[in-house]
Image (cartoon, one colour):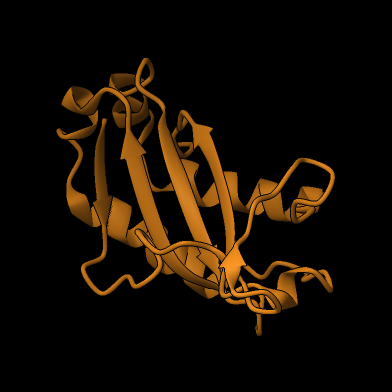
Length: 136
């Protein structure tokens, strides 16, 4: 697996900490941050719009994981990291595409915080996606 991130990221390799206890936070599906359907659609749209249909087709068999690090104060995306399970096809896409996705996530995404979220040093959301590309 290969990863790419902005060199200024501070949370990519940091532990998620519960500030009340100072201990590493572990989550389960029942207590994880709920993401509303509109936010999910917006995230997928940002990714899909970054690629032409031809580019999306080239990497169709190689989904990648996008990891969003969200501020527990504002609910805004602060950092973005990518993990590639098969890097060969994705490496043929310019890094500027992934940077564009990062900038749009930071600009447009806002997650509704739960009370539990406010006690963490950051909120972590991640998922795999295979882009379909923007309509031509």
